[in-house]
Image (cartoon, rainbow, N blue to C red; front, side):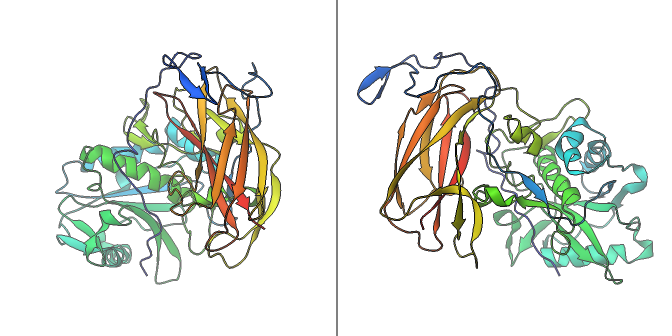
Length: 427
C-alpha cells in the first residue's frame, strides 16, 4: 500500500540564504525606535543584564526521541536513476559520497547511524522511461516488481538496504491525478515484500523547486529524505527517531517531527555542502546542538545563534487540537479570563548585537487566524543574559482542546530569525 509519509516543502523563502557576518552591539540600530515612549538604541529593560557566559541560559528546548523501533545503523544506499537523465552520474556520486561525509556524521551520527556505503554495485540505471505521469501508488507497485524480479538488476535487499529512486525528468509524479509537487512530492516510506518483510525507500522528484537547478533541487530534497529514511526507515510499523519528547510538545506543533521536517522551514535551512560533499544540502535537527545553545539545525551556520528560552515552565495538562487525550508537558497554565506573566532569557552562543523579541500566537509556520490571546512584552530588546517579561491574557478558549501555542520570535536586521514555541494551557 502506498502511504505518503512526508512532505518536503521547498519554497523560495525556504532557500533564502542570510548574511553570515557577525553583528556588533547596536551596529544595526542607526535609527531610533520608540519603546514605551522613549527613544533608544538597543536599550534593554531587563532586570538582569548582559552576560559573558555563552549561552547565559540553558535552553529549555525540544529533543527528537528514538521510539525504540528500527534504525539503519550501517546503511547501504542503492541509487536508482534512468539512462535518459543527464544528471544520473551526479546523483550516483551523491549517493556514494553522502554516507562517509562530515555532513552525515554530524546529521545522523548522534542518533546511532553509522557510515553508509554505496558504490558501482549499488547503481541501477533503468533503460526505459516510465509513463509521462505516474501515481505514487503505481510507482510503489513498480518498485515492488523490480525487487521481486531477478532480472531487474536491482540488488537484493537486506536489513540495511535503502533504495533511493530519482525520478526521470520526463516523468511527473501525481497524487490523485494532481501534480505531486502540490502535495507530498519527494517522500520516504516502506514497501512490503511477499515474505511480509518491509523495505525502506525514497522517491526523489527534482521538479518541484523551479528557482533552483535540477541538481540542486534534487540533492537538497534527497539529503532531507535519505537522512530521515535511515533514522526512521519503517515509520509505519517500527518507528525509530521521530517525535519530540513529552516535555516539549509545543515543538511538536510546529511541523512534522522527523529530523528534516523541523529544520526545512527555517530560512537558512539549505546550503552548499563542504568539500567532501559539494552539493546542495539541508540542515537537520541536532539534539546535542540544541541542548548546548547552538543552532538546533546542523551543520551550524557561521552566524552566531541567538534566541530566548522560557524560564520556570510548569507542568500543564494540555489537550492539543483534536487529539483524543491530553498530555502532561511543559508550558504555563493561564485559565480563560486570566492574566499571568512569565519570563524568558536571552541567550546566544557567541557575542552579538542587540536583538528584538516579539510574540506571535500560533507557530511561525501557521500563525493563528482567530486570536485568543493578548500579549505584551517588557524588555523586548536585549543581549545574552537579559530577561524579557511576557504578560499573557487568555481572552477565549481555543475551538478544540485546551492549549494554545504562543511563539516568541527573535530577530535582528540582516540575520536569520529564530523562534521558540510555548504552550499555554487554558484550564
